[in-house]
Image 1 (cartoon, one colour):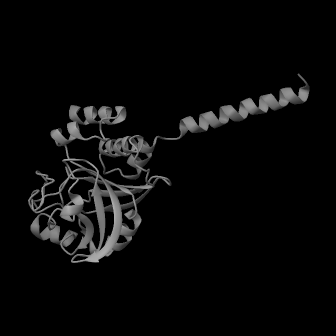
Image 2 (cartoon, one colour):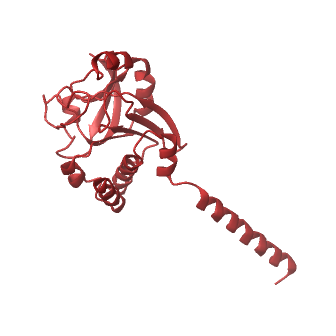
Length: 233
């Protein structure tokens, strides 16, 4: 081998080693998002990512953005996070309402039934926007049969609401409640909706044993591992 070829081979090996070291040092997506959202449960973020990965493995198109709602937190705390997955950025951390019959400050009951006035759990995909009774709103398709697949028929949409604000929470001990929709503050409703419209994922979590066991998007290996970890705690 000539001196030039030996030198080139050495440079290639050094480059490969540096690339591998840099790649190994890069945090996982779950770790990166958890660092951006220190008030979120990292296991819930991991479960949301596992659900989207499982959905992609089952033929659902990927998404660039992900909204995570943790209904195990009280309504008086911001419990909605919107992430840009491609850029690894936190775009929103907001209050979000649950359904009137889901609970007071704490959510306790969820349903897929029409007229239940309860929130639904699981993985959703966003669709188009429209202007309706609650102003600018975002339709969502529930992807989980028996859990949230009546979301369109129930008009479970993201919209702004005057009762979603900190002052209301201080006065009432909870924010206002919806008919099941994940309503947000009026001030950020339009930009948040525009961030999520057109085929992004929304993941709504609560430690409901039946849903965690039945969800088709938590049955992939990572989803099973994350579910087991949450159950252990």
